[in-house]
Amino acid sequence: MATLQFPKGFLWGTATASYQVEGGAFEDGRGLSVWDMLCRKPGAIYNGHSGATACDQYHRYSEDIALMRELGARGHRFSLSWPRILPEGVGAVNAKGLDYYDRFIDGLLAAGVQPYVTLFHWDYPYELYCKGGWLNPDSPRWFADYAALVVERYSDRVTHWMTHNEPQCFVWLGHSVGVHAPGDKLGWAEVLRVGHNALLAHGRAVQAMRAAAKQPIQIGFAPVSSQAMPADPNNPADVDAARQATFAVRGQDFWNNTWFSDPIFLKRYPEDGVALYGDAMPAIGADDFEIIGQPIDFYGANIYQGVVVRAGANGPELVPFPDGYPHTAFPWPVTPEALYWGPRFLYERYKTPIYITENGLASMDWVGIDQRVHDRGRIDFTTRYLAELHRAIKDGVDVRGYFHWSLLDNFEWAEGYKQRFGLVHVDFATLKRTPKDSFVWYQGVVRANGF
Ligand code: FCB
Image 1 (cartoon, protein in one colour):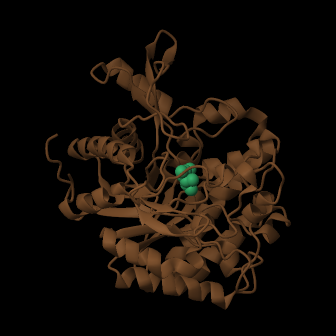
Image 2 (cartoon, rainbow, N blue to C red):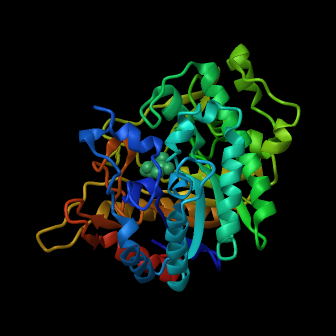
Image 3 (cartoon, helix red, strand yellow):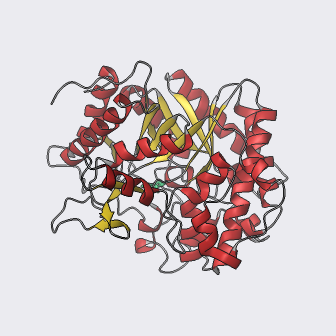
Protein backbone atom coordinates (compact mmCIF):
# COMPACT_ATOMS: atom_id res chain seq x y z
CA MET A 1 0.00 0.00 0.00
CA ALA A 2 1.21 3.47 -0.85
CA THR A 3 2.20 5.84 1.92
CA LEU A 4 -0.67 8.05 3.03
CA GLN A 5 0.16 11.40 4.59
CA PHE A 6 -2.54 13.32 6.42
CA PRO A 7 -2.61 17.14 6.41
CA LYS A 8 -0.21 18.93 8.71
CA GLY A 9 -1.76 19.45 12.14
CA PHE A 10 -4.35 16.70 11.63
CA LEU A 11 -5.54 15.80 15.11
CA TRP A 12 -5.16 12.14 16.06
CA GLY A 13 -6.98 11.11 19.19
CA THR A 14 -8.98 8.62 21.17
CA ALA A 15 -12.50 8.78 22.58
CA THR A 16 -14.39 7.60 25.66
CA ALA A 17 -17.54 8.59 27.59
CA SER A 18 -18.08 9.09 31.31
CA TYR A 19 -20.51 6.29 32.13
CA GLN A 20 -18.60 3.81 29.99
CA VAL A 21 -15.25 4.19 31.75
CA GLU A 22 -15.43 6.13 35.01
CA GLY A 23 -17.07 3.89 37.58
CA GLY A 24 -17.04 5.55 41.00
CA ALA A 25 -20.76 5.76 40.41
CA PHE A 26 -21.79 6.14 44.02
CA GLU A 27 -18.81 8.06 45.36
CA ASP A 28 -17.92 11.58 46.37
CA GLY A 29 -21.44 12.92 46.08
CA ARG A 30 -22.20 11.90 42.50
CA GLY A 31 -25.95 11.85 41.82
CA LEU A 32 -27.71 9.00 40.06
CA SER A 33 -28.00 8.90 36.31
CA VAL A 34 -30.67 7.22 34.22
CA TRP A 35 -28.05 4.63 33.25
CA ASP A 36 -27.50 3.64 36.91
CA MET A 37 -31.22 3.03 37.07
CA LEU A 38 -31.56 1.14 33.79
CA CYS A 39 -28.74 -1.15 34.92
CA ARG A 40 -30.84 -2.15 37.93
CA LYS A 41 -33.69 -3.29 35.73
CA PRO A 42 -33.69 -7.08 35.29
CA GLY A 43 -32.96 -8.11 31.74
CA ALA A 44 -32.13 -4.62 30.50
CA ILE A 45 -28.36 -5.11 30.17
CA TYR A 46 -26.42 -8.13 28.92
CA ASN A 47 -25.73 -10.45 31.86
CA GLY A 48 -26.91 -7.81 34.34
CA HIS A 49 -23.71 -5.78 33.86
CA SER A 50 -23.53 -2.14 34.96
CA GLY A 51 -21.18 0.81 34.77
CA ALA A 52 -20.85 1.03 38.56
CA THR A 53 -17.13 0.20 38.30
CA ALA A 54 -16.55 0.14 34.52
CA CYS A 55 -12.81 0.77 33.92
CA ASP A 56 -12.57 2.53 37.30
CA GLN A 57 -11.10 5.55 35.52
CA TYR A 58 -12.37 7.70 38.37
CA HIS A 59 -9.51 6.23 40.42
CA ARG A 60 -7.13 5.15 37.66
CA TYR A 61 -7.19 8.23 35.46
CA SER A 62 -3.45 8.83 35.89
CA GLU A 63 -2.71 5.40 34.47
CA ASP A 64 -5.00 6.09 31.51
CA ILE A 65 -3.44 9.47 30.86
CA ALA A 66 -0.01 7.80 30.96
CA LEU A 67 -1.28 5.40 28.29
CA MET A 68 -2.37 8.33 26.13
CA ARG A 69 1.01 9.95 26.58
CA GLU A 70 2.64 6.72 25.48
CA LEU A 71 0.29 6.52 22.51
CA GLY A 72 1.29 10.03 21.52
CA ALA A 73 -2.32 10.99 20.85
CA ARG A 74 -2.75 14.73 20.44
CA GLY A 75 -6.37 14.83 21.53
CA HIS A 76 -8.78 12.94 23.71
CA ARG A 77 -12.55 13.18 23.48
CA PHE A 78 -14.34 12.42 26.73
CA SER A 79 -17.60 13.43 28.37
CA LEU A 80 -18.47 14.99 31.69
CA SER A 81 -20.93 13.21 33.94
CA TRP A 82 -23.68 15.77 34.49
CA PRO A 83 -24.88 14.14 37.76
CA ARG A 84 -21.32 13.96 39.10
CA ILE A 85 -21.20 17.74 38.82
CA LEU A 86 -24.84 18.54 39.59
CA PRO A 87 -26.20 15.58 41.60
CA GLU A 88 -29.78 16.73 41.07
CA GLY A 89 -29.15 18.03 37.57
CA VAL A 90 -29.74 21.62 38.65
CA GLY A 91 -28.98 23.65 41.76
CA ALA A 92 -26.38 22.46 44.25
CA VAL A 93 -22.93 21.88 42.75
CA ASN A 94 -20.77 18.93 43.82
CA ALA A 95 -17.30 20.44 44.31
CA LYS A 96 -15.66 17.01 44.28
CA GLY A 97 -17.15 16.32 40.87
CA LEU A 98 -15.78 19.55 39.45
CA ASP A 99 -12.40 18.83 41.07
CA TYR A 100 -12.22 15.43 39.41
CA TYR A 101 -12.44 16.93 35.93
CA ASP A 102 -9.91 19.62 36.90
CA ARG A 103 -7.45 16.85 37.68
CA PHE A 104 -8.32 14.95 34.53
CA ILE A 105 -8.00 17.99 32.25
CA ASP A 106 -4.76 19.14 33.88
CA GLY A 107 -3.38 15.63 33.54
CA LEU A 108 -4.21 15.52 29.84
CA LEU A 109 -2.64 18.91 29.20
CA ALA A 110 0.51 17.93 31.07
CA ALA A 111 0.71 14.84 28.81
CA GLY A 112 0.39 17.00 25.71
CA VAL A 113 -3.14 15.78 24.98
CA GLN A 114 -5.76 18.35 24.05
CA PRO A 115 -9.13 17.80 25.76
CA TYR A 116 -12.25 17.65 23.55
CA VAL A 117 -15.15 17.72 25.95
CA THR A 118 -18.65 16.36 25.32
CA LEU A 119 -21.27 17.78 27.68
CA PHE A 120 -23.77 15.01 27.33
CA HIS A 121 -22.98 11.42 26.44
CA TRP A 122 -26.24 9.97 27.80
CA ASP A 123 -25.81 9.79 31.61
CA TYR A 124 -28.78 12.08 32.27
CA PRO A 125 -29.42 13.06 35.91
CA TYR A 126 -32.05 10.73 37.32
CA GLU A 127 -33.56 13.52 39.44
CA LEU A 128 -34.33 15.47 36.28
CA TYR A 129 -35.84 12.39 34.69
CA CYS A 130 -38.20 12.26 37.67
CA LYS A 131 -39.27 15.81 36.80
CA GLY A 132 -40.20 14.72 33.30
CA GLY A 133 -36.71 14.67 31.79
CA TRP A 134 -36.49 15.86 28.21
CA LEU A 135 -40.28 16.17 28.04
CA ASN A 136 -40.21 19.00 30.56
CA PRO A 137 -40.31 22.41 28.81
CA ASP A 138 -37.62 23.59 31.26
CA SER A 139 -35.21 20.87 30.13
CA PRO A 140 -33.38 23.08 27.60
CA ARG A 141 -32.71 25.61 30.40
CA TRP A 142 -31.42 22.91 32.73
CA PHE A 143 -28.93 21.86 30.09
CA ALA A 144 -27.89 25.42 29.30
CA ASP A 145 -27.25 26.15 33.00
CA TYR A 146 -25.10 23.03 33.28
CA ALA A 147 -23.24 24.03 30.10
CA ALA A 148 -22.56 27.54 31.43
CA LEU A 149 -21.27 26.14 34.72
CA VAL A 150 -18.71 23.81 33.18
CA VAL A 151 -17.58 26.23 30.47
CA GLU A 152 -17.05 28.87 33.14
CA ARG A 153 -14.96 26.39 35.09
CA TYR A 154 -12.86 24.76 32.37
CA SER A 155 -12.72 27.06 29.35
CA ASP A 156 -9.47 28.62 30.54
CA ARG A 157 -7.99 25.23 29.51
CA VAL A 158 -10.53 23.60 27.23
CA THR A 159 -11.14 25.18 23.82
CA HIS A 160 -13.08 22.40 22.04
CA TRP A 161 -16.55 21.41 23.17
CA MET A 162 -19.43 19.27 21.98
CA THR A 163 -23.01 19.49 23.26
CA HIS A 164 -24.82 16.20 22.60
CA ASN A 165 -23.44 12.84 21.63
CA GLU A 166 -25.72 10.99 19.19
CA PRO A 167 -29.15 12.48 19.89
CA GLN A 168 -30.50 9.72 17.63
CA CYS A 169 -29.58 7.17 20.28
CA PHE A 170 -30.62 8.82 23.51
CA VAL A 171 -33.83 10.18 22.00
CA TRP A 172 -34.90 7.16 19.96
CA LEU A 173 -33.24 4.14 21.62
CA GLY A 174 -33.87 5.73 25.03
CA HIS A 175 -37.43 7.01 24.63
CA SER A 176 -39.01 5.00 21.82
CA VAL A 177 -37.37 1.57 21.67
CA GLY A 178 -36.44 1.58 25.35
CA VAL A 179 -33.20 -0.39 25.05
CA HIS A 180 -31.11 2.57 26.25
CA ALA A 181 -31.73 4.71 29.34
CA PRO A 182 -34.17 5.87 30.51
CA GLY A 183 -35.75 2.78 28.92
CA ASP A 184 -39.04 4.37 27.87
CA LYS A 185 -41.37 3.42 25.05
CA LEU A 186 -43.24 6.65 24.43
CA GLY A 187 -45.63 7.39 21.61
CA TRP A 188 -44.15 9.04 18.53
CA ALA A 189 -45.49 12.54 19.32
CA GLU A 190 -43.76 12.41 22.71
CA VAL A 191 -40.54 11.10 21.16
CA LEU A 192 -40.58 14.03 18.72
CA ARG A 193 -41.09 16.38 21.63
CA VAL A 194 -38.11 14.84 23.46
CA GLY A 195 -36.09 15.43 20.29
CA HIS A 196 -37.25 19.02 19.93
CA ASN A 197 -36.36 19.84 23.53
CA ALA A 198 -32.96 18.20 23.03
CA LEU A 199 -32.40 20.46 20.01
CA LEU A 200 -33.48 23.54 21.97
CA ALA A 201 -31.14 22.41 24.75
CA HIS A 202 -28.28 22.27 22.24
CA GLY A 203 -29.03 25.81 20.97
CA ARG A 204 -29.47 27.33 24.41
CA ALA A 205 -26.28 25.62 25.57
CA VAL A 206 -24.34 27.08 22.63
CA GLN A 207 -25.54 30.57 23.59
CA ALA A 208 -24.69 29.99 27.25
CA MET A 209 -21.27 28.54 26.43
CA ARG A 210 -20.23 31.46 24.22
CA ALA A 211 -21.33 33.87 26.96
CA ALA A 212 -19.45 32.00 29.70
CA ALA A 213 -16.25 31.19 27.79
CA LYS A 214 -13.01 32.71 29.07
CA GLN A 215 -11.42 32.58 25.62
CA PRO A 216 -12.77 31.87 22.15
CA ILE A 217 -14.05 28.30 22.04
CA GLN A 218 -14.98 25.93 19.24
CA ILE A 219 -18.34 24.21 19.58
CA GLY A 220 -19.70 21.19 17.75
CA PHE A 221 -22.05 18.31 18.29
CA ALA A 222 -21.55 14.63 17.57
CA PRO A 223 -24.46 12.84 15.91
CA VAL A 224 -24.18 9.28 14.67
CA SER A 225 -24.04 9.23 10.90
CA SER A 226 -26.17 6.86 8.86
CA GLN A 227 -24.35 6.55 5.59
CA ALA A 228 -25.40 5.22 2.27
CA MET A 229 -22.67 4.37 -0.24
CA PRO A 230 -23.14 4.03 -4.00
CA ALA A 231 -23.12 0.49 -5.42
CA ASP A 232 -21.08 1.81 -8.34
CA PRO A 233 -19.10 4.90 -7.35
CA ASN A 234 -18.44 5.65 -11.03
CA ASN A 235 -22.12 5.81 -11.86
CA PRO A 236 -23.46 9.32 -11.08
CA ALA A 237 -27.01 7.95 -10.70
CA ASP A 238 -25.85 5.61 -7.92
CA VAL A 239 -23.95 8.44 -6.25
CA ASP A 240 -27.12 10.53 -6.34
CA ALA A 241 -29.12 7.64 -4.93
CA ALA A 242 -26.62 7.30 -2.08
CA ARG A 243 -26.82 11.03 -1.38
CA GLN A 244 -30.61 10.91 -1.34
CA ALA A 245 -30.66 7.87 0.93
CA THR A 246 -28.13 9.49 3.27
CA PHE A 247 -30.43 12.47 3.77
CA ALA A 248 -33.86 10.83 3.73
CA VAL A 249 -36.22 10.41 6.68
CA ARG A 250 -37.86 7.04 6.28
CA GLY A 251 -40.02 6.06 9.24
CA GLN A 252 -40.57 6.28 12.97
CA ASP A 253 -36.92 5.97 13.82
CA PHE A 254 -33.98 8.35 13.85
CA TRP A 255 -31.51 6.44 11.70
CA ASN A 256 -31.04 9.45 9.52
CA ASN A 257 -28.77 12.47 9.45
CA THR A 258 -31.23 15.27 8.80
CA TRP A 259 -33.68 15.20 11.69
CA PHE A 260 -31.10 16.62 14.11
CA SER A 261 -28.56 18.20 11.77
CA ASP A 262 -30.89 20.19 9.48
CA PRO A 263 -32.37 22.22 12.37
CA ILE A 264 -28.87 22.98 13.68
CA PHE A 265 -27.23 23.88 10.36
CA LEU A 266 -30.19 24.84 8.14
CA LYS A 267 -32.68 26.09 10.75
CA ARG A 268 -35.51 23.79 9.70
CA TYR A 269 -36.71 20.23 9.97
CA PRO A 270 -36.36 18.18 6.77
CA GLU A 271 -39.57 18.43 4.71
CA ASP A 272 -39.93 14.70 4.09
CA GLY A 273 -39.90 14.07 7.84
CA VAL A 274 -42.38 16.84 8.59
CA ALA A 275 -44.75 15.40 5.97
CA LEU A 276 -44.25 11.87 7.25
CA TYR A 277 -44.80 12.72 10.92
CA GLY A 278 -47.85 14.92 10.24
CA ASP A 279 -49.85 15.75 13.33
CA ALA A 280 -47.34 14.03 15.64
CA MET A 281 -45.06 17.05 15.05
CA PRO A 282 -44.31 19.11 18.16
CA ALA A 283 -45.41 22.72 18.48
CA ILE A 284 -42.56 24.90 17.26
CA GLY A 285 -42.08 28.33 18.86
CA ALA A 286 -41.43 31.41 16.70
CA ASP A 287 -37.78 31.68 17.85
CA ASP A 288 -37.03 27.98 18.11
CA PHE A 289 -34.97 27.65 14.95
CA GLU A 290 -33.03 30.81 15.75
CA ILE A 291 -32.06 29.24 19.07
CA ILE A 292 -31.37 25.79 17.65
CA GLY A 293 -29.47 27.14 14.66
CA GLN A 294 -26.83 29.11 16.57
CA PRO A 295 -23.69 29.03 14.45
CA ILE A 296 -21.31 26.27 15.49
CA ASP A 297 -17.76 25.52 14.45
CA PHE A 298 -17.53 21.85 13.62
CA TYR A 299 -19.53 18.76 12.78
CA GLY A 300 -18.57 15.72 14.85
CA ALA A 301 -19.36 12.63 12.83
CA ASN A 302 -19.54 9.24 14.56
CA ILE A 303 -19.17 6.81 11.67
CA TYR A 304 -18.98 3.04 12.01
CA GLN A 305 -20.80 1.56 9.03
CA GLY A 306 -22.91 2.23 5.99
CA VAL A 307 -25.39 0.60 3.64
CA VAL A 308 -25.04 0.20 -0.13
CA VAL A 309 -27.66 1.62 -2.49
CA ARG A 310 -28.15 1.90 -6.22
CA ALA A 311 -30.44 4.01 -8.37
CA GLY A 312 -33.70 2.14 -8.92
CA ALA A 313 -36.80 2.90 -10.96
CA ASN A 314 -38.52 4.36 -7.85
CA GLY A 315 -35.56 5.99 -6.12
CA PRO A 316 -32.66 4.54 -4.11
CA GLU A 317 -32.68 0.75 -3.68
CA LEU A 318 -30.87 -1.06 -0.92
CA VAL A 319 -28.29 -3.58 -2.16
CA PRO A 320 -28.00 -6.36 0.41
CA PHE A 321 -24.55 -7.47 1.54
CA PRO A 322 -23.57 -10.80 0.01
CA ASP A 323 -23.64 -13.89 2.22
CA GLY A 324 -20.58 -14.14 4.39
CA TYR A 325 -19.79 -10.43 4.12
CA PRO A 326 -17.20 -9.37 6.76
CA HIS A 327 -18.62 -8.04 9.99
CA THR A 328 -17.30 -7.02 13.40
CA ALA A 329 -18.17 -8.72 16.69
CA PHE A 330 -21.25 -6.50 17.21
CA PRO A 331 -22.03 -7.57 14.34
CA TRP A 332 -21.76 -4.49 12.13
CA PRO A 333 -20.65 -4.76 8.47
CA VAL A 334 -17.12 -3.68 7.61
CA THR A 335 -17.66 -0.79 5.18
CA PRO A 336 -14.52 1.38 4.90
CA GLU A 337 -16.13 3.56 2.18
CA ALA A 338 -18.47 4.95 4.85
CA LEU A 339 -15.50 7.06 5.90
CA TYR A 340 -15.29 8.46 2.38
CA TRP A 341 -18.95 9.05 1.47
CA GLY A 342 -20.01 10.07 4.98
CA PRO A 343 -17.68 13.05 5.36
CA ARG A 344 -18.13 13.95 1.69
CA PHE A 345 -21.94 14.10 1.77
CA LEU A 346 -22.03 15.77 5.20
CA TYR A 347 -19.57 18.44 4.09
CA GLU A 348 -21.51 19.09 0.89
CA ARG A 349 -24.76 19.63 2.77
CA TYR A 350 -23.63 21.37 5.96
CA LYS A 351 -20.43 23.10 4.75
CA THR A 352 -18.85 22.81 8.19
CA PRO A 353 -15.41 21.41 9.10
CA ILE A 354 -15.62 17.83 10.25
CA TYR A 355 -14.01 15.80 13.00
CA ILE A 356 -14.49 12.05 13.01
CA THR A 357 -15.50 11.98 16.66
CA GLU A 358 -15.90 8.18 16.74
CA ASN A 359 -14.88 5.25 14.57
CA GLY A 360 -13.74 1.80 15.55
CA LEU A 361 -14.96 -1.75 16.06
CA ALA A 362 -15.79 -4.40 18.58
CA SER A 363 -13.56 -7.42 18.12
CA MET A 364 -12.96 -10.78 19.75
CA ASP A 365 -9.90 -9.87 21.81
CA TRP A 366 -8.26 -11.68 24.69
CA VAL A 367 -4.87 -11.68 26.37
CA GLY A 368 -2.91 -14.39 24.61
CA ILE A 369 -0.71 -17.11 25.93
CA ASP A 370 2.20 -14.73 25.27
CA GLN A 371 0.47 -12.05 27.43
CA ARG A 372 -0.20 -9.87 24.39
CA VAL A 373 -3.41 -9.01 22.54
CA HIS A 374 -3.11 -9.72 18.82
CA ASP A 375 -6.02 -7.74 17.38
CA ARG A 376 -5.05 -7.91 13.70
CA GLY A 377 -8.64 -7.22 12.77
CA ARG A 378 -8.62 -3.78 14.40
CA ILE A 379 -5.43 -2.82 12.57
CA ASP A 380 -6.81 -3.98 9.24
CA PHE A 381 -10.23 -2.37 9.81
CA THR A 382 -8.77 0.98 10.83
CA THR A 383 -6.22 0.97 8.01
CA ARG A 384 -8.99 0.47 5.47
CA TYR A 385 -11.25 3.13 7.01
CA LEU A 386 -8.45 5.68 7.34
CA ALA A 387 -7.42 5.14 3.72
CA GLU A 388 -10.97 6.14 2.72
CA LEU A 389 -10.90 9.14 5.04
CA HIS A 390 -7.64 10.18 3.44
CA ARG A 391 -9.27 9.96 0.02
CA ALA A 392 -12.12 12.21 1.21
CA ILE A 393 -9.59 14.78 2.41
CA LYS A 394 -7.75 14.58 -0.91
CA ASP A 395 -11.05 15.26 -2.66
CA GLY A 396 -11.47 18.48 -0.73
CA VAL A 397 -13.44 17.53 2.38
CA ASP A 398 -12.30 19.60 5.36
CA VAL A 399 -11.62 16.94 7.99
CA ARG A 400 -9.66 18.19 11.01
CA GLY A 401 -9.14 15.10 13.11
CA TYR A 402 -9.95 11.50 13.96
CA PHE A 403 -10.81 10.08 17.39
CA HIS A 404 -10.61 6.32 17.61
CA TRP A 405 -13.38 4.69 19.62
CA SER A 406 -12.09 3.70 22.02
CA LEU A 407 -9.00 4.11 24.17
CA LEU A 408 -10.14 1.29 26.46
CA ASP A 409 -12.47 -1.69 26.36
CA ASN A 410 -15.45 -0.36 28.29
CA PHE A 411 -19.11 -0.65 29.25
CA GLU A 412 -20.90 -0.90 25.92
CA TRP A 413 -24.39 0.19 27.07
CA ALA A 414 -27.03 -2.55 26.69
CA GLU A 415 -24.27 -4.94 25.57
CA GLY A 416 -22.43 -4.57 28.87
CA TYR A 417 -18.81 -5.75 28.74
CA LYS A 418 -19.48 -8.16 25.90
CA GLN A 419 -18.16 -5.86 23.18
CA ARG A 420 -14.50 -4.81 23.28
CA PHE A 421 -13.76 -1.57 21.41
CA GLY A 422 -10.43 -0.60 23.00
CA LEU A 423 -6.92 -0.04 21.73
CA VAL A 424 -6.17 -1.16 25.27
CA HIS A 425 -7.58 -4.39 26.70
CA VAL A 426 -9.19 -4.17 30.13
CA ASP A 427 -9.57 -7.22 32.35
CA PHE A 428 -12.82 -6.33 34.14
CA ALA A 429 -12.03 -8.60 37.11
CA THR A 430 -8.63 -7.08 37.90
CA LEU A 431 -8.95 -3.83 35.89
CA LYS A 432 -5.50 -4.49 34.45
CA ARG A 433 -4.82 -2.59 31.22
CA THR A 434 -2.94 -4.33 28.40
CA PRO A 435 -2.20 -2.32 25.26
CA LYS A 436 -3.20 -4.33 22.20
CA ASP A 437 -1.16 -4.68 19.02
CA SER A 438 -3.43 -1.99 17.52
CA PHE A 439 -2.22 0.44 20.20
CA VAL A 440 1.34 0.06 18.98
CA TRP A 441 0.16 0.36 15.37
CA TYR A 442 -1.86 3.54 16.11
CA GLN A 443 1.18 4.98 17.89
CA GLY A 444 3.00 4.63 14.57
CA VAL A 445 0.14 6.29 12.66
CA VAL A 446 0.19 9.26 15.01
CA ARG A 447 3.97 9.57 14.77
CA ALA A 448 4.06 9.36 10.98
CA ASN A 449 0.84 11.38 10.54
CA GLY A 450 -0.26 8.58 8.27
CA PHE A 451 0.90 5.11 7.39
C1 FCB B 1 -21.65 4.94 19.76
C2 FCB B 1 -21.61 5.59 21.12
C3 FCB B 1 -20.42 5.19 21.94
C4 FCB B 1 -20.06 3.74 21.76
C5 FCB B 1 -19.97 3.37 20.31
C6 FCB B 1 -19.60 1.94 20.05
O1 FCB B 1 -22.98 4.85 19.33
O2 FCB B 1 -21.61 6.99 20.99
O3 FCB B 1 -20.67 5.55 23.26
O4 FCB B 1 -20.95 2.96 22.47
O5 FCB B 1 -21.19 3.63 19.67
